[in-house]
Length: 128
Image (cartoon, rainbow, N blue to C red; front, side, top):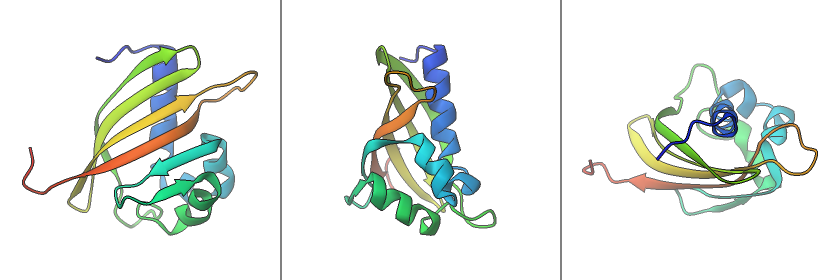
């Protein structure tokens, strides 16, 4: 169930920004959106840390203006606790689909939401 609070809208905006090629190419911009304690379990099953993700992001899919891009659908979110938002959605890129889940947090005097955890699960081609 989506509860469209300001917090959820801000986390969704951050999530969409991380799919933007200009952000993916910029270690500085991406670094502002990823929590220093960030961890991802990618669709490949690989575990990524903050530093690994920032180093690899410019070379990953979706990082060029003229290349394939993520097409997100059904983004919903809920404020789990003060400073903690959970988002779920699906993406399609070059025919490959994945279900995604992200935790965004805003701590202390922070002015922006940052992605703390992300997981992508591939959707088999014959699935609905």
